[in-house]
Length: 519
Image 1 (cartoon, rainbow, N blue to C red):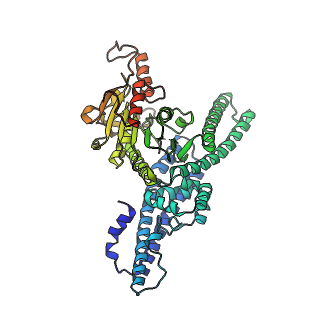
Image 2: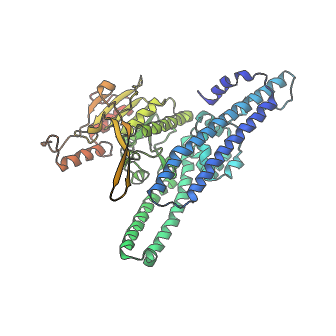
Protein backbone atom coordinates (compact mmCIF):
# COMPACT_ATOMS: atom_id res chain seq x y z
CA UNK A 1 0.00 0.00 0.00
CA UNK A 2 1.39 3.38 -1.02
CA UNK A 3 1.45 6.43 1.24
CA UNK A 4 -1.55 8.04 -0.47
CA UNK A 5 -3.61 4.88 -0.02
CA UNK A 6 -2.63 4.68 3.63
CA UNK A 7 -3.59 8.32 4.00
CA UNK A 8 -7.10 7.75 2.66
CA UNK A 9 -7.66 5.02 5.24
CA UNK A 10 -5.93 6.73 8.16
CA UNK A 11 -7.64 10.09 7.69
CA UNK A 12 -11.11 8.77 6.91
CA UNK A 13 -12.35 10.11 10.23
CA UNK A 14 -10.99 13.63 9.66
CA UNK A 15 -13.85 14.83 7.47
CA UNK A 16 -14.85 18.24 8.76
CA UNK A 17 -11.71 18.59 10.87
CA UNK A 18 -10.41 22.02 11.80
CA UNK A 19 -7.89 23.07 9.13
CA UNK A 20 -5.77 25.13 11.51
CA UNK A 21 -5.50 22.24 13.98
CA UNK A 22 -4.49 19.85 11.21
CA UNK A 23 -1.74 22.22 10.06
CA UNK A 24 -0.55 22.80 13.63
CA UNK A 25 -0.37 19.05 14.23
CA UNK A 26 1.49 18.59 10.94
CA UNK A 27 4.02 21.18 12.09
CA UNK A 28 4.58 19.34 15.39
CA UNK A 29 5.07 16.01 13.60
CA UNK A 30 7.45 17.65 11.11
CA UNK A 31 9.47 19.08 14.01
CA UNK A 32 9.75 15.63 15.59
CA UNK A 33 10.88 14.18 12.26
CA UNK A 34 13.55 16.86 11.85
CA UNK A 35 14.78 16.20 15.40
CA UNK A 36 15.31 12.54 14.51
CA UNK A 37 17.17 13.63 11.37
CA UNK A 38 19.36 16.00 13.38
CA UNK A 39 20.10 13.25 15.90
CA UNK A 40 21.18 10.83 13.17
CA UNK A 41 23.30 13.46 11.45
CA UNK A 42 24.87 14.62 14.71
CA UNK A 43 25.79 11.10 15.80
CA UNK A 44 27.20 10.36 12.36
CA UNK A 45 29.33 13.49 12.47
CA UNK A 46 30.55 12.66 15.99
CA UNK A 47 31.45 9.12 14.98
CA UNK A 48 33.21 10.31 11.83
CA UNK A 49 35.23 12.90 13.74
CA UNK A 50 36.23 10.59 16.59
CA UNK A 51 39.57 8.79 16.12
CA UNK A 52 39.00 5.07 16.69
CA UNK A 53 41.66 2.86 15.19
CA UNK A 54 41.46 -0.89 14.80
CA UNK A 55 38.78 -3.41 13.82
CA UNK A 56 36.40 -2.47 16.66
CA UNK A 57 36.07 1.06 15.31
CA UNK A 58 35.42 -0.15 11.79
CA UNK A 59 32.90 -2.70 13.03
CA UNK A 60 30.98 -0.13 15.09
CA UNK A 61 30.94 2.35 12.20
CA UNK A 62 29.65 -0.36 9.87
CA UNK A 63 26.89 -1.36 12.30
CA UNK A 64 25.87 2.26 12.85
CA UNK A 65 25.58 2.91 9.11
CA UNK A 66 23.89 -0.38 8.24
CA UNK A 67 21.69 -1.08 11.30
CA UNK A 68 21.15 1.71 13.84
CA UNK A 69 21.08 4.81 11.64
CA UNK A 70 18.50 3.32 9.21
CA UNK A 71 16.13 2.78 12.16
CA UNK A 72 16.15 6.51 12.91
CA UNK A 73 15.79 7.31 9.22
CA UNK A 74 12.81 4.98 8.82
CA UNK A 75 11.12 6.47 11.88
CA UNK A 76 11.65 9.97 10.53
CA UNK A 77 10.34 8.87 7.14
CA UNK A 78 7.17 7.48 8.74
CA UNK A 79 6.60 10.81 10.48
CA UNK A 80 7.11 12.67 7.20
CA UNK A 81 4.54 10.38 5.63
CA UNK A 82 2.10 11.44 8.34
CA UNK A 83 2.98 15.09 7.66
CA UNK A 84 2.07 14.61 4.00
CA UNK A 85 -1.25 13.02 4.98
CA UNK A 86 -2.11 15.82 7.40
CA UNK A 87 -1.19 18.58 4.95
CA UNK A 88 -3.13 16.89 2.14
CA UNK A 89 -6.25 16.56 4.26
CA UNK A 90 -5.94 20.13 5.49
CA UNK A 91 -5.69 21.33 1.88
CA UNK A 92 -8.61 19.14 0.80
CA UNK A 93 -10.71 20.30 3.73
CA UNK A 94 -9.93 23.94 2.96
CA UNK A 95 -10.72 23.43 -0.73
CA UNK A 96 -14.04 21.76 0.13
CA UNK A 97 -14.94 24.58 2.48
CA UNK A 98 -14.05 27.14 -0.18
CA UNK A 99 -16.19 25.38 -2.80
CA UNK A 100 -19.09 25.40 -0.34
CA UNK A 101 -18.56 29.08 0.36
CA UNK A 102 -17.67 28.43 3.98
CA UNK A 103 -13.95 29.07 4.03
CA UNK A 104 -11.11 31.21 2.81
CA UNK A 105 -9.78 30.71 -0.71
CA UNK A 106 -6.25 29.96 -1.84
CA UNK A 107 -6.18 26.20 -1.16
CA UNK A 108 -3.42 24.28 -2.92
CA UNK A 109 -5.42 21.07 -3.41
CA UNK A 110 -4.08 17.52 -3.36
CA UNK A 111 -2.75 17.68 -6.93
CA UNK A 112 0.18 19.88 -5.91
CA UNK A 113 1.59 17.51 -3.30
CA UNK A 114 4.88 15.79 -4.14
CA UNK A 115 6.60 13.52 -1.58
CA UNK A 116 5.42 15.50 1.41
CA UNK A 117 5.59 19.01 -0.09
CA UNK A 118 4.08 21.21 -2.79
CA UNK A 119 4.96 20.97 -6.47
CA UNK A 120 8.71 21.35 -6.94
CA UNK A 121 9.42 20.64 -3.27
CA UNK A 122 10.63 17.51 -1.52
CA UNK A 123 9.46 17.30 2.08
CA UNK A 124 8.90 21.05 2.14
CA UNK A 125 12.38 21.76 0.76
CA UNK A 126 12.80 23.75 -2.43
CA UNK A 127 15.40 23.19 -5.12
CA UNK A 128 17.40 26.05 -3.58
CA UNK A 129 17.23 24.37 -0.15
CA UNK A 130 18.30 21.01 -1.53
CA UNK A 131 21.17 22.51 -3.51
CA UNK A 132 22.62 24.00 -0.32
CA UNK A 133 22.35 20.88 1.87
CA UNK A 134 25.30 18.75 2.99
CA UNK A 135 26.01 15.36 1.45
CA UNK A 136 25.00 13.52 4.65
CA UNK A 137 21.64 15.30 4.84
CA UNK A 138 20.98 14.61 1.17
CA UNK A 139 21.70 10.89 1.64
CA UNK A 140 19.32 10.83 4.61
CA UNK A 141 16.61 12.44 2.49
CA UNK A 142 17.22 9.90 -0.29
CA UNK A 143 16.84 7.02 2.14
CA UNK A 144 13.70 8.52 3.67
CA UNK A 145 11.81 9.28 0.46
CA UNK A 146 12.91 6.08 -1.29
CA UNK A 147 10.26 4.38 0.85
CA UNK A 148 7.64 5.78 -1.56
CA UNK A 149 9.29 5.67 -5.01
CA UNK A 150 6.06 6.52 -6.83
CA UNK A 151 5.81 9.82 -4.93
CA UNK A 152 9.53 10.46 -5.45
CA UNK A 153 9.12 9.86 -9.17
CA UNK A 154 6.15 12.26 -9.30
CA UNK A 155 8.22 14.91 -7.49
CA UNK A 156 11.12 14.49 -9.92
CA UNK A 157 8.82 14.77 -12.93
CA UNK A 158 7.30 17.96 -11.48
CA UNK A 159 10.67 19.71 -11.82
CA UNK A 160 11.77 21.58 -14.91
CA UNK A 161 14.72 20.17 -16.89
CA UNK A 162 16.83 23.04 -15.58
CA UNK A 163 15.91 22.21 -11.97
CA UNK A 164 16.70 18.54 -12.53
CA UNK A 165 20.08 19.41 -14.04
CA UNK A 166 20.85 21.69 -11.11
CA UNK A 167 20.09 18.97 -8.54
CA UNK A 168 22.12 16.39 -10.47
CA UNK A 169 25.07 18.78 -10.16
CA UNK A 170 24.51 20.34 -6.71
CA UNK A 171 22.66 17.55 -4.84
CA UNK A 172 23.98 14.34 -6.43
CA UNK A 173 23.76 12.36 -3.17
CA UNK A 174 19.98 12.88 -3.23
CA UNK A 175 19.37 12.24 -6.93
CA UNK A 176 21.82 9.34 -7.16
CA UNK A 177 20.24 7.46 -4.26
CA UNK A 178 16.53 8.28 -4.58
CA UNK A 179 14.39 5.35 -5.72
CA UNK A 180 11.90 6.50 -8.34
CA UNK A 181 14.33 8.83 -10.13
CA UNK A 182 14.96 7.63 -13.71
CA UNK A 183 18.04 5.43 -14.05
CA UNK A 184 20.04 7.68 -16.37
CA UNK A 185 19.52 10.70 -14.12
CA UNK A 186 20.81 8.66 -11.18
CA UNK A 187 23.81 7.62 -13.26
CA UNK A 188 24.63 11.26 -14.07
CA UNK A 189 24.41 12.20 -10.40
CA UNK A 190 26.60 9.31 -9.28
CA UNK A 191 29.19 10.22 -11.91
CA UNK A 192 29.51 13.56 -10.09
CA UNK A 193 29.94 11.76 -6.76
CA UNK A 194 32.57 9.53 -8.35
CA UNK A 195 34.46 12.63 -9.47
CA UNK A 196 34.41 14.03 -5.94
CA UNK A 197 35.70 10.70 -4.59
CA UNK A 198 38.56 10.75 -7.10
CA UNK A 199 39.56 14.19 -5.80
CA UNK A 200 39.52 12.90 -2.21
CA UNK A 201 41.52 9.82 -3.19
CA UNK A 202 44.05 11.95 -5.08
CA UNK A 203 44.64 14.03 -1.96
CA UNK A 204 45.32 10.86 0.04
CA UNK A 205 47.58 9.50 -2.72
CA UNK A 206 49.72 12.63 -2.49
CA UNK A 207 49.98 12.18 1.29
CA UNK A 208 51.12 8.58 0.86
CA UNK A 209 53.68 9.54 -1.77
CA UNK A 210 55.11 12.19 0.57
CA UNK A 211 55.35 9.66 3.41
CA UNK A 212 57.06 7.10 1.18
CA UNK A 213 59.53 9.73 -0.01
CA UNK A 214 60.50 10.46 3.62
CA UNK A 215 61.19 7.10 5.35
CA UNK A 216 61.98 8.83 8.64
CA UNK A 217 58.33 9.84 8.96
CA UNK A 218 57.09 6.26 8.83
CA UNK A 219 58.59 4.50 11.86
CA UNK A 220 61.63 4.37 14.10
CA UNK A 221 62.36 0.65 14.00
CA UNK A 222 63.33 -1.18 10.82
CA UNK A 223 60.74 -3.91 11.46
CA UNK A 224 57.78 -1.58 11.94
CA UNK A 225 59.04 0.63 9.11
CA UNK A 226 58.89 -2.32 6.71
CA UNK A 227 55.37 -3.17 7.84
CA UNK A 228 54.20 0.44 7.63
CA UNK A 229 55.79 0.90 4.22
CA UNK A 230 54.04 -2.19 2.87
CA UNK A 231 50.72 -0.99 4.32
CA UNK A 232 51.15 2.36 2.57
CA UNK A 233 52.03 0.65 -0.71
CA UNK A 234 48.94 -1.55 -0.41
CA UNK A 235 46.74 1.47 0.29
CA UNK A 236 48.27 3.34 -2.64
CA UNK A 237 47.59 0.44 -5.00
CA UNK A 238 43.99 0.15 -3.77
CA UNK A 239 43.32 3.87 -4.24
CA UNK A 240 44.77 3.83 -7.74
CA UNK A 241 42.60 0.84 -8.67
CA UNK A 242 39.53 2.58 -7.26
CA UNK A 243 40.29 5.80 -9.13
CA UNK A 244 40.71 3.95 -12.42
CA UNK A 245 37.22 2.47 -12.05
CA UNK A 246 35.63 5.71 -10.86
CA UNK A 247 37.17 7.57 -13.80
CA UNK A 248 35.30 5.17 -16.06
CA UNK A 249 32.11 6.32 -14.32
CA UNK A 250 33.04 9.98 -14.82
CA UNK A 251 33.78 9.31 -18.50
CA UNK A 252 30.49 7.44 -19.00
CA UNK A 253 32.04 4.04 -19.67
CA UNK A 254 30.64 2.71 -16.37
CA UNK A 255 27.09 3.50 -15.22
CA UNK A 256 26.64 3.67 -11.45
CA UNK A 257 22.95 3.39 -10.59
CA UNK A 258 23.89 3.50 -6.89
CA UNK A 259 27.16 4.67 -5.35
CA UNK A 260 27.63 5.39 -1.64
CA UNK A 261 31.10 4.38 -0.48
CA UNK A 262 30.50 5.16 3.20
CA UNK A 263 27.40 2.94 3.28
CA UNK A 264 29.19 0.17 1.33
CA UNK A 265 26.66 0.38 -1.54
CA UNK A 266 27.30 0.08 -5.25
CA UNK A 267 25.04 -1.01 -8.12
CA UNK A 268 26.39 -0.94 -11.66
CA UNK A 269 24.02 -0.72 -14.61
CA UNK A 270 25.01 -2.24 -17.96
CA UNK A 271 23.06 -1.28 -21.07
CA UNK A 272 20.52 1.38 -22.01
CA UNK A 273 17.37 1.38 -19.84
CA UNK A 274 15.49 3.54 -22.36
CA UNK A 275 15.74 0.96 -25.16
CA UNK A 276 15.84 -2.23 -23.05
CA UNK A 277 13.16 -4.87 -23.45
CA UNK A 278 14.34 -7.19 -20.66
CA UNK A 279 16.17 -6.86 -17.34
CA UNK A 280 18.94 -8.98 -15.85
CA UNK A 281 19.40 -8.72 -12.09
CA UNK A 282 22.73 -10.12 -10.91
CA UNK A 283 23.25 -10.81 -7.19
CA UNK A 284 26.80 -12.00 -6.43
CA UNK A 285 27.86 -14.14 -3.51
CA UNK A 286 29.94 -14.24 -0.35
CA UNK A 287 32.92 -11.90 0.02
CA UNK A 288 31.68 -9.42 -2.61
CA UNK A 289 33.07 -5.97 -1.78
CA UNK A 290 33.34 -2.56 -3.41
CA UNK A 291 36.77 -3.67 -4.65
CA UNK A 292 35.14 -6.60 -6.47
CA UNK A 293 33.78 -4.09 -8.99
CA UNK A 294 37.01 -2.24 -9.72
CA UNK A 295 38.51 -4.96 -11.92
CA UNK A 296 35.18 -5.81 -13.61
CA UNK A 297 35.38 -9.38 -12.31
CA UNK A 298 32.01 -9.52 -10.57
CA UNK A 299 30.34 -7.92 -13.62
CA UNK A 300 32.05 -10.18 -16.17
CA UNK A 301 29.26 -12.60 -17.04
CA UNK A 302 26.62 -9.85 -16.96
CA UNK A 303 28.68 -7.87 -19.48
CA UNK A 304 28.91 -10.94 -21.72
CA UNK A 305 25.16 -11.59 -21.54
CA UNK A 306 24.20 -7.96 -22.15
CA UNK A 307 26.49 -7.99 -25.19
CA UNK A 308 25.03 -11.23 -26.54
CA UNK A 309 21.37 -10.31 -26.03
CA UNK A 310 20.55 -6.87 -27.48
CA UNK A 311 18.27 -4.53 -25.52
CA UNK A 312 19.20 -6.07 -22.16
CA UNK A 313 19.77 -3.82 -19.18
CA UNK A 314 21.67 -5.53 -16.36
CA UNK A 315 22.05 -4.49 -12.74
CA UNK A 316 24.98 -5.92 -10.80
CA UNK A 317 24.07 -5.59 -7.14
CA UNK A 318 25.85 -4.85 -3.90
CA UNK A 319 23.28 -2.70 -2.16
CA UNK A 320 24.82 -2.97 1.30
CA UNK A 321 27.48 -4.97 3.13
CA UNK A 322 27.49 -8.53 1.81
CA UNK A 323 28.24 -11.75 3.71
CA UNK A 324 31.93 -12.33 4.38
CA UNK A 325 34.04 -15.24 5.54
CA UNK A 326 33.95 -14.19 9.20
CA UNK A 327 31.79 -14.68 12.29
CA UNK A 328 30.38 -11.15 12.14
CA UNK A 329 28.70 -11.56 8.73
CA UNK A 330 28.91 -15.24 7.70
CA UNK A 331 27.15 -16.56 4.58
CA UNK A 332 24.91 -18.62 6.89
CA UNK A 333 23.46 -15.45 8.50
CA UNK A 334 19.74 -15.60 7.70
CA UNK A 335 18.99 -12.17 9.21
CA UNK A 336 21.64 -10.52 7.02
CA UNK A 337 20.22 -12.21 3.93
CA UNK A 338 16.75 -11.09 4.99
CA UNK A 339 17.84 -7.46 5.38
CA UNK A 340 19.62 -7.45 2.03
CA UNK A 341 16.59 -9.14 0.47
CA UNK A 342 14.30 -6.39 1.76
CA UNK A 343 16.69 -3.80 0.31
CA UNK A 344 16.66 -5.70 -2.99
CA UNK A 345 12.85 -5.65 -3.05
CA UNK A 346 12.89 -1.90 -2.43
CA UNK A 347 15.40 -1.49 -5.26
CA UNK A 348 13.03 -3.33 -7.59
CA UNK A 349 10.12 -1.13 -6.49
CA UNK A 350 12.19 1.92 -7.36
CA UNK A 351 12.87 0.55 -10.83
CA UNK A 352 9.21 -0.20 -11.40
CA UNK A 353 8.29 3.35 -10.39
CA UNK A 354 10.72 4.50 -13.10
CA UNK A 355 9.09 2.47 -15.89
CA UNK A 356 10.34 -1.11 -15.50
CA UNK A 357 7.05 -2.63 -14.34
CA UNK A 358 6.20 -4.55 -17.53
CA UNK A 359 9.75 -5.63 -18.37
CA UNK A 360 10.67 -9.35 -18.09
CA UNK A 361 13.26 -9.78 -15.35
CA UNK A 362 15.67 -12.70 -15.05
CA UNK A 363 17.36 -12.64 -11.64
CA UNK A 364 20.51 -14.64 -10.93
CA UNK A 365 21.89 -15.42 -7.48
CA UNK A 366 25.37 -16.87 -7.05
CA UNK A 367 26.27 -18.68 -3.81
CA UNK A 368 24.90 -16.62 -0.88
CA UNK A 369 23.33 -14.33 -3.49
CA UNK A 370 20.55 -16.89 -3.96
CA UNK A 371 19.55 -16.46 -0.30
CA UNK A 372 19.39 -12.68 -0.83
CA UNK A 373 17.47 -13.06 -4.08
CA UNK A 374 14.84 -15.39 -2.65
CA UNK A 375 14.57 -13.26 0.50
CA UNK A 376 13.62 -10.37 -1.80
CA UNK A 377 10.75 -12.52 -3.08
CA UNK A 378 9.59 -13.02 0.49
CA UNK A 379 9.76 -9.22 0.86
CA UNK A 380 7.49 -8.74 -2.16
CA UNK A 381 9.71 -8.69 -5.26
CA UNK A 382 8.63 -10.66 -8.35
CA UNK A 383 10.77 -12.01 -11.18
CA UNK A 384 10.13 -13.75 -14.48
CA UNK A 385 12.96 -16.22 -13.84
CA UNK A 386 15.12 -17.02 -10.81
CA UNK A 387 18.43 -18.75 -11.50
CA UNK A 388 20.68 -20.34 -8.88
CA UNK A 389 24.36 -20.56 -9.78
CA UNK A 390 25.72 -22.87 -7.08
CA UNK A 391 23.30 -21.15 -4.71
CA UNK A 392 23.40 -21.81 -0.99
CA UNK A 393 19.62 -22.17 -0.64
CA UNK A 394 16.55 -20.44 0.77
CA UNK A 395 15.37 -19.56 4.26
CA UNK A 396 12.65 -21.56 5.95
CA UNK A 397 9.19 -20.36 4.96
CA UNK A 398 10.18 -19.39 1.41
CA UNK A 399 7.84 -20.60 -1.31
CA UNK A 400 8.21 -20.42 -5.10
CA UNK A 401 6.29 -17.57 -6.69
CA UNK A 402 3.54 -18.64 -9.08
CA UNK A 403 4.42 -17.68 -12.63
CA UNK A 404 8.18 -17.59 -11.96
CA UNK A 405 10.55 -20.11 -13.55
CA UNK A 406 13.22 -21.55 -11.22
CA UNK A 407 16.49 -23.07 -12.43
CA UNK A 408 19.67 -24.32 -10.77
CA UNK A 409 23.14 -24.84 -12.20
CA UNK A 410 25.68 -26.27 -9.75
CA UNK A 411 29.18 -27.42 -10.67
CA UNK A 412 30.31 -30.98 -10.01
CA UNK A 413 31.79 -31.36 -6.53
CA UNK A 414 31.02 -27.69 -5.84
CA UNK A 415 32.26 -26.27 -2.54
CA UNK A 416 28.69 -25.17 -1.71
CA UNK A 417 27.33 -28.73 -1.55
CA UNK A 418 28.46 -29.61 2.02
CA UNK A 419 26.63 -26.57 3.48
CA UNK A 420 23.41 -26.84 1.50
CA UNK A 421 20.46 -27.63 3.72
CA UNK A 422 22.45 -26.96 6.89
CA UNK A 423 20.29 -25.22 9.47
CA UNK A 424 21.09 -25.20 13.14
CA UNK A 425 22.99 -23.55 15.96
CA UNK A 426 26.24 -22.14 14.63
CA UNK A 427 28.89 -20.06 16.47
CA UNK A 428 28.31 -16.33 16.00
CA UNK A 429 30.87 -14.92 18.45
CA UNK A 430 33.86 -16.14 20.46
CA UNK A 431 35.12 -14.25 23.51
CA UNK A 432 38.39 -15.05 25.26
CA UNK A 433 38.66 -14.05 28.90
CA UNK A 434 40.19 -14.96 32.21
CA UNK A 435 43.86 -14.83 33.05
CA UNK A 436 46.91 -16.53 31.60
CA UNK A 437 46.76 -19.11 34.38
CA UNK A 438 43.00 -19.51 34.19
CA UNK A 439 41.82 -18.74 30.65
CA UNK A 440 38.17 -18.96 29.61
CA UNK A 441 36.36 -19.13 26.32
CA UNK A 442 32.75 -18.10 25.74
CA UNK A 443 31.03 -19.10 22.52
CA UNK A 444 27.70 -17.57 21.46
CA UNK A 445 25.49 -19.62 19.17
CA UNK A 446 22.73 -18.47 16.81
CA UNK A 447 20.39 -20.43 14.61
CA UNK A 448 21.62 -19.96 11.06
CA UNK A 449 21.65 -21.58 7.67
CA UNK A 450 19.21 -22.13 4.81
CA UNK A 451 17.28 -25.40 5.09
CA UNK A 452 15.65 -25.23 1.64
CA UNK A 453 17.88 -26.24 -1.26
CA UNK A 454 17.49 -25.28 -4.96
CA UNK A 455 16.12 -28.72 -5.82
CA UNK A 456 13.24 -30.18 -7.80
CA UNK A 457 11.44 -30.74 -4.51
CA UNK A 458 11.42 -26.97 -4.00
CA UNK A 459 10.34 -26.08 -7.54
CA UNK A 460 13.71 -25.75 -9.32
CA UNK A 461 14.67 -27.37 -12.61
CA UNK A 462 18.12 -28.81 -11.85
CA UNK A 463 20.23 -28.52 -15.00
CA UNK A 464 23.63 -29.76 -16.14
CA UNK A 465 26.22 -27.02 -15.55
CA UNK A 466 28.81 -28.62 -17.82
CA UNK A 467 31.42 -28.09 -15.08
CA UNK A 468 32.65 -31.35 -13.56
CA UNK A 469 35.65 -32.67 -11.68
CA UNK A 470 38.75 -32.95 -13.84
CA UNK A 471 40.29 -35.34 -11.29
CA UNK A 472 38.22 -38.35 -10.13
CA UNK A 473 37.47 -38.15 -6.39
CA UNK A 474 39.31 -41.36 -5.49
CA UNK A 475 39.62 -40.62 -1.80
CA UNK A 476 35.98 -40.72 -0.73
CA UNK A 477 35.27 -38.38 2.17
CA UNK A 478 38.93 -37.31 2.42
CA UNK A 479 39.69 -35.46 -0.83
CA UNK A 480 43.26 -34.46 -1.52
CA UNK A 481 44.04 -30.72 -1.46
CA UNK A 482 43.90 -30.46 -5.25
CA UNK A 483 40.30 -31.70 -5.22
CA UNK A 484 39.37 -29.20 -2.51
CA UNK A 485 40.89 -26.36 -4.49
CA UNK A 486 39.10 -27.54 -7.62
CA UNK A 487 35.75 -27.49 -5.83
CA UNK A 488 36.40 -23.91 -4.71
CA UNK A 489 37.57 -22.88 -8.18
CA UNK A 490 34.46 -24.40 -9.76
CA UNK A 491 32.27 -22.49 -7.31
CA UNK A 492 33.72 -19.21 -8.61
CA UNK A 493 34.02 -20.31 -12.24
CA UNK A 494 30.31 -20.95 -12.69
CA UNK A 495 29.47 -17.25 -12.18
CA UNK A 496 32.41 -15.83 -14.13
CA UNK A 497 32.78 -14.69 -17.74
CA UNK A 498 34.62 -17.99 -18.34
CA UNK A 499 31.64 -20.10 -17.29
CA UNK A 500 30.56 -23.13 -19.30
CA UNK A 501 28.64 -22.98 -22.56
CA UNK A 502 25.75 -24.74 -20.82
CA UNK A 503 25.35 -21.99 -18.23
CA UNK A 504 25.96 -19.13 -20.64
CA UNK A 505 23.56 -20.46 -23.29
CA UNK A 506 20.94 -21.28 -20.67
CA UNK A 507 20.96 -17.68 -19.43
CA UNK A 508 20.84 -16.38 -23.01
CA UNK A 509 17.79 -18.57 -23.65
CA UNK A 510 16.00 -17.14 -20.63
CA UNK A 511 16.77 -13.57 -21.67
CA UNK A 512 15.35 -14.26 -25.14
CA UNK A 513 12.17 -15.83 -23.79
CA UNK A 514 13.17 -19.48 -24.25
CA UNK A 515 13.62 -22.30 -21.76
CA UNK A 516 17.14 -23.58 -21.03
CA UNK A 517 18.19 -26.88 -22.53
CA UNK A 518 17.14 -29.76 -20.28
CA UNK A 519 14.36 -27.92 -18.45
